Image 1: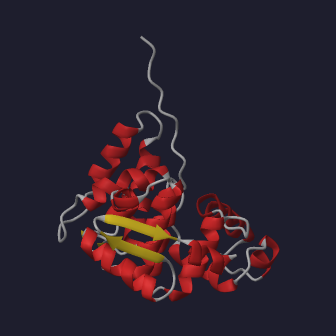
Image 2: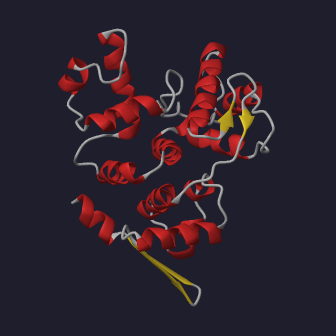
Length: 241
């Protein structure tokens, strides 16, 4: 029988994390021109080589350019978000591109609040999902980087104990999560049943309440009547274009 081959996942987590601070610095700069980023050392790296590598990893995950509609939505919403919500926005974006972040989602969210995230369990899960794809050293590095990313996003506290905590997102991450679900073809009630809405750790009624807040703030149009959900991003897309 032929052996089923699992391709090596698309990820930066064998080398980097979601790099929230670097991404935040990049957005604050307001330009994505490599020469300016390097000349001003916006990412605060000790060497040009490390700066170029970091910029390369950032571009692989966040696709930052003015032609990318998702990036334009992301950066439009960014200034309206509180610090904790910016961190969650970053994770939501990474979930779209990074296979290891998506795979680790269940492991992290299934860890009870107040319990420790077990790094060995995370390594074992990665090894079982991607057998013979990574060396033990790379698996350890990926597990540590993933734990760091979830910590940066607000799901874990403590450098050593890595204790699971619950996030409390506002309306901005909810808008972005629903937008991501919309981009992937979900409509109506299915918008509330995706990995992006799961990572919010909110009930459907809480998500609907925050969508109503976003509607009041003129970011999108949301209606729920007679059991029918209608969401339009026309206002949001008009603002970015």
